[in-house]
Length: 288
Length: 155
Image (tube, rainbow over all chains, first blue to last red):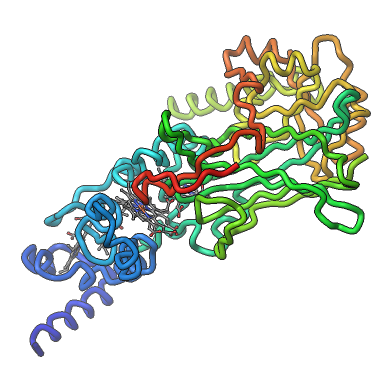
């Protein structure tokens, strides 16, 4: 026991003094027989803080263990068993030297399933055309060489300035005022990215002079499931603004309208509360 | 030396490209430059002012139908860059003035839709991809994460 500690301590001193870990100081056998975290402490620590590392936590298992095919779920949530993803789920079984990973191919296994096309949408995005990849946005400090934080919408602030609403009005003689709304976003894939479990809503409200709500119209962007056609992709595509037009604005003493864009961590209807909901943008415009 | 000459050549051709888009007219932008601009995280607002029929028959993806009458268009006060798609022969001045009042920097797509089409870029028929909020009832699934079971019908 003491001996092992001594070795580890000596190794640490070497690393700290040379500022580097080189193959010569560690035998191949050592590398394969110790937990990855022994040597890759920084990486292991930052990965442990991610959603992926706890994708099949205790709570998740309790909630889902009575499903018919937990294996199906675990293919993505914990392919190697345990609490969630582990190093080998992306890097393969080893041994050293590990091959350099191809991003985004390595992510596609879980992020490009039916009802989920994050990687496919990414390939058609302005970000991909600019030569960026997943890590440019999801590993904020990737240059450090140890960052494995894989940040996403669960991290507060991640969704700041991700989407933008433009609310204009066209005065048609026949139809009365029509709201002409544009929704654009800067994610490197569809918005919402990820699986069918997320949704983005545009909510347009007619407001009376005292700010009471006269009417509400909402539209959901995300995945829909059609009984015959199966999954329908109604997400906001990358690099292409979506356009909405609404008329009949003046009813119910409306004096101005307010458009909001919301990111929701649940697929279902708006009237079901989502404590994690994030407002992406909001804008108001008076009726002429 | 060879290398330096190549760099100079590359630089010159870059300057030529920039100049070409300038000569398209003051405040105007050619189809390629617009395509590139739309492909950035901060694209301009695109207004099609050719009228409903022309708009529905095909426009630049993401363009809004602002109607034909500048006085009948009320933009939000967020300002920024706006690119106008004008019908042939239509004077841009009334639009420029109207939008400038709301704090917009106005640019004009040189050659209008004709130039956009000629350049071979995608033309979108807004009516097709048009989202009509709240018109269709749809199923909200629980998700692949919940074995594809439709969870609730919502309208």
